[in-house]
Image 1 (cartoon, chains in turn red, yellow):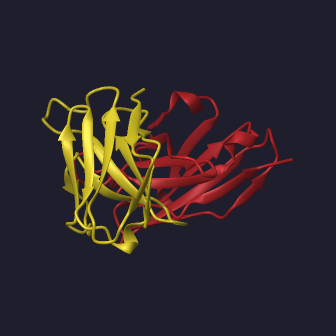
Image 2 (image 1 turned 135 degrees about the vertical axis):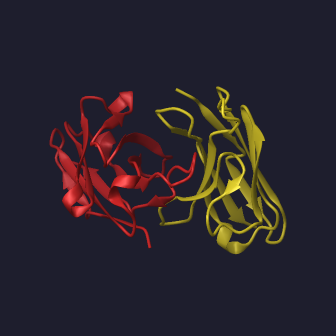
Image 3 (image 1 turned 180 degrees about the horizontal axis):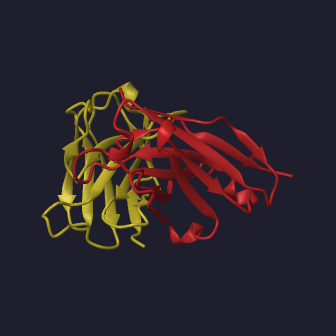
Length: 120
Length: 112
């Protein structure tokens, strides 16, 4: 069965960088784009960007350009999201989510989420 | 960016009764291939969101048939034919046509 398992919660200082991992299993890793979506406490969902695990190609939301980097390690079927120059309003749960196999079938599986708290 | 607007934001429903959520987009989500790139998600309390509907009206795998999606262009609706206690949570619509993918504000369904 498809699983996306994320790394554990982080507490970071303002100005630092955080790197969250998402390990995929149960399907062919190279076959589906992986996305990052975040959710601030009590708030809605915000798409951050995607990676094509096959080529390593990425696309980011304009809001995060220059601060976010998504990479992958195909040898261990894992995608990483690094967010730099952290601010207090980056405190959120960060989710990875997979594109499904069908047309328009985005985000058919989600990771369990990683809480990143930015606080001095 | 496409702006997604949901209504209502809060929806109290008696078990067994129907429920309906509206989602409006600031731009048409109708692709030249004839599909509407609109998805619906449910986030149950303390859980990750999960996919209910994609391409406007296609139920995701394992989703009960009491959930249905309809609409085209800029106006979409999610309907639950008979609400059950397990349907409690926040429902989000999302445009899947172009990046940045954007979500509605969410509609909180609660049981009366």
